[in-house]
Image (tube, rainbow, N blue to C red; front, side, top):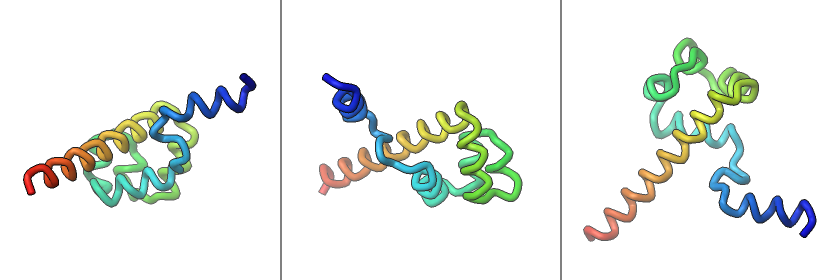
Length: 91
């Protein structure tokens, strides 16, 4: 098995594969808003004069913050799926 096949196999189970950081951030801002996002991930670019541009710049340079944002994104997605499943079951 060559490197490209191994890489595809590894990415198959990665829920963030193919998801751009800007899409993650825009989703979180839409779902939570800047204020709640700042409470969840305590970084200044979410607190003081927040913008997508400044947040992207910071998150690309700061791996620990990006990891927290990615985990929060996955958490919001799993809640969204659970809510849809619950609504379908109760209908």
